[in-house]
Image (tube, rainbow, N blue to C red; front, side):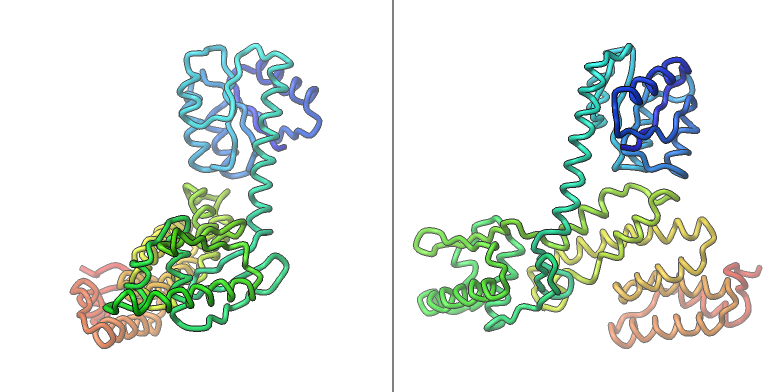
Length: 388
């Protein structure tokens, strides 16, 4: 258990450190701070503590404000407020602090707090373990199944109708979908009497495919007289949900989070159900796509602010690969290549953009890009700046 202590009173800091080291066997106090500004810098640039014991009344920065900053840059860190005043308890728990301890800290109360920390950290470890040791349904690009310790397998659906039926129920998991909705989805415009039997047979094929793939922990429950169906995942999980949980826990890109940010964004393997022309999946595709795009731009901005041109190009090319219809990525790369005096790179990006927009999509590129490129060709732009 890695711990940081923050208190502007030296005696209080020393006392808390001694109490923790005496009462807790598996604790590692990696740093102590009397200055809140130094504390947040230490957490961002050096440490990734499991827990911060944090005083509330400090002269330079209120402990509540410091707690908010810690949550923003290190959301996995638990916060325990230590104070002589009890009127801040409600605000502390509004910040989702793990505990609120009154000074002077009693031995039994400290043990109770540490026990709560251990329990919370244990739950986190268990959740991470579950994420890697459960049956997985892969939804990026195409539907695949991954059993613990096994290779990914692509399901062999009996028919395209069986594949779409499973995908639709998976998309609406834990909801009862009425038979009439499924019939209209799979056999639009046909009379219900003629297609009800086909739905029953198709559902049988879906269940058989799940059984063949050893994914029969996924249950499809039938309503009264087969009037509706409900898919339940059991212990299986979706890779898209795992990815979203992972990416949402990182609130900002900085020196302490950039590596985790990169890893989380790498888990986005492609478009949600992107290999299938299911119009009903488009809203979820777009939601996840732009969630990924937002965080990729945050990462790219971090690279740019730290002068990592190669990293900016790499991240922008990934955006371009995932979203080839977004004009912005081409324009960013044109400017970057110009700053690097890479004329061929500028030309290549402009050609790719005009081909994609004007030939493939039959829409004109923006006047801003066209004007910038024209000025660049005339030598009126150097290193990203327009010559006056």
